[in-house]
Length: 258
Image (cartoon, rainbow, N blue to C red; front, side):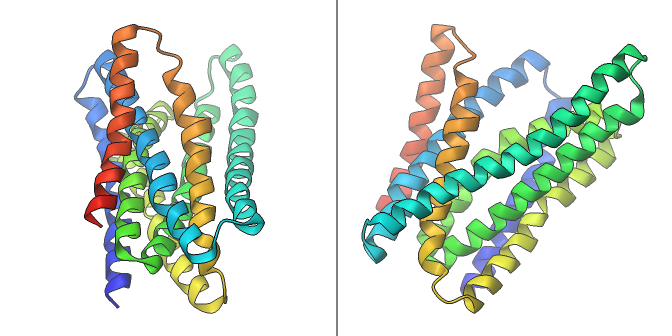
């Protein structure tokens, strides 16, 4: 019973992160950009740290490192890649329409469709986060806490960006915060689905950890780290390296404490 409570509290906290987008209203654009890249670096370190220091060692300890475990890790990478491709395909489809809209004085309805598609894509992503958090807690509490922290750190820059997209799409501040929260709250639904599926499907538990590790490796390697290469100034690069190592350090600390 206590595992269910831990899981639901965790996914509720993940959902609350959606309100952090309101910070963009109080900070200058240049300052927000530098903060975002620091957070992206921190999230990348936390995701990689959780994958390599918590999830994979636990999975190897339970099942050994063989072909099947390696394939499940790769399945996590591939499935997250496909999921993101589908989301990006829809976004690009609408963005091409939006180019023609700009030629026709930027029809508001087309711009709003981009924001809605972004909202749907983020909702699917949050649903998956809930499933992964639930699976991690069912292994043990320290793994669940580490995964929750990694997800939260990843969600902070993501939610700030999503909030900006909704404002650009014509949503009022209140509506942007509300819809962003509803999208984030799908993590709660994902957690309930994850707990139910694991209790019903025999043997699913053994593959949750390596699958989650693969997903985290993909997000860090394909989405977050490439963003940091866009900044070439030495001072910023050193700061981003520090944030990356800090994210890894947080996972090391959780491993020691756990």
